[in-house]
Length: 405
Image 1 (cartoon, one colour):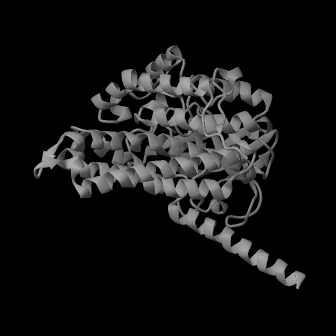
Image 2 (cartoon, rainbow, N blue to C red):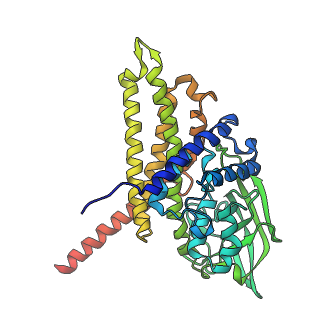
């Protein structure tokens, strides 16, 4: 069977336009503010960049066509998102930054027609931002979602939600939230979660402090969010009651892969800068790029870039076929999170003193990509899941073999 790894002409054209847009409009702004989105203007800058992206024809490559997007599938998104991720502000400009990009994807698949009109349409158009409120402080839901403690109790005509979330990306300035709350069972038990939609200005919903983190390019920060008798009507249920964890899988696998796409672009930028520098920098009687130790770092970066793309393509293909691709996305996410950091770290080393300074963007790239080994599931949790599946399959095979004997 022939395998075609090429992209359609319209995707290639969009990649080229995205590269040009990022180079001409986005990189200068990022460089002027050392990759700090708040210092650069926050939402005011977002609006300006997104308007420029619309004029350039590169806005919302992931969103459904009927909501102003390009309607690209997962495989076709990969090179476009990577091109956008070459700048830390590129995903914001194209409206493909987390968590909005993942929320657009999930709402397009799950929301009712009325919910799409109220929430998806303005989000896809860039009129508002959003938050995905699932993570809680210990002992609540984090790497283990079954520890969910935020609870929604049935009330006349709707639900009342009480609980505390934290590390909610984009919460400051979000127009609405998708809230994961327990509607049955107890913390630690599987299932029993429901997703709800709520405007950010709803009584009983409060955005608290920013949690100070090393990354600076996530618009709206990472915040605490409090729910105190937050009332939401029955029409605010996203999907079905008690099926929240199942519906979340629609979002989580693709969101992990789009993180890979974006941060691979950032890592490739660091690599490009380092290779250009060692090709010209003189030291020890030759160009640095002609020295064996430097060549090893260059080669290892090339290998990590190629391997990340290959694993990403496999996982995205499975997602496009309708699979949850749980194992493939875990493998690709774990490898990529570590590979991306290795790429940037080697690039920093190749640039020497400038690599740790603000004179080059490599240091800020390291600041941004390091959290990926924790965000969207720590590497250790994904490794546990991968191993559990492999051992479980071996046990099942052994039991089947015994049954045939």
